[in-house]
Image 1 (tube, rainbow, N blue to C red):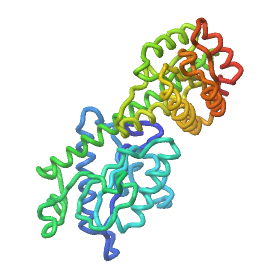
Image 2: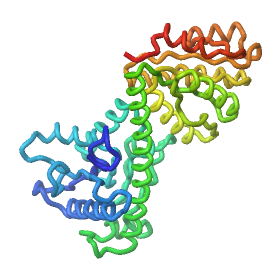
Image 3: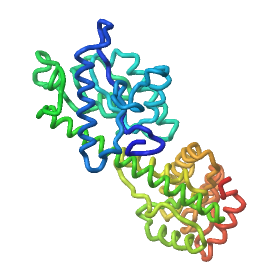
Image 4: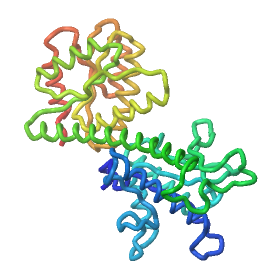
Length: 366
């Protein structure tokens, strides 16, 4: 098990083309790529955060369990190993673009992340080791179909004359700048992604463990969604629900950002935590448009994503603490059509209504 931990066995899978044009099993491109892998792993092993826990998969790694087993079928084990990897690292070259094996590895990895409920954004590291002219696969392009910026290991200013990567044909421990500087930058970025992913998985595991303990003792865990702009209402709801014997996640209201990438990351984290909870509660606030958005985005879309991960019912209710400002017949009808219960929280005590709803809705996970 690597640094990130379950459900991932390896931290990084290095996908590259051997560039074997004559069928000999050897090539200078393979020689350089495998030497690159050794230096990449060495830098991670020297890092105080990752050290001995870091785990790199390479088809020709010297450690058993981190390379192809010559006693087993190639396709099945490669698929299993890449599906069990946290970050996909690609050595981009014209040979990579033309390799069916590399395409299969990429497809296996992306499909598995979708099955696990994880986004692939920010988890594919592209090391440009040779200039390319052909189009890149969609998964290696951004939203505007532009290739990922990645990390350049060749001199762009002399690409036509000297397209070979730095330290050709074989980098080693004595290799210095510009190879070493670019390698350390790559290690830094991958390290940030691994740490972020580990923190999210650890948070999810804590939620699941807390839910399991509470379930054993008859307790329940609820996800309380509220916007940072309605922090006061959210905090009051947290206090009331906690005093009624419920465990409430997350530890703070959801921030609001205008940045699309940031919002996607926030939603992904929300879904992960939500998947370990018994029920979902939405704090209404007084902004009618925000309530409509929360009903659709959180109460429907994110809730369905969480249910797909946990394979468990996740009943949802809206805590109406604004009354007539939002409780229009049309909005209540819309909530009902989304299978979202409407709970009047304008007068205390309202927590008994939540407890009754949890009981009748089957909030306790089977």
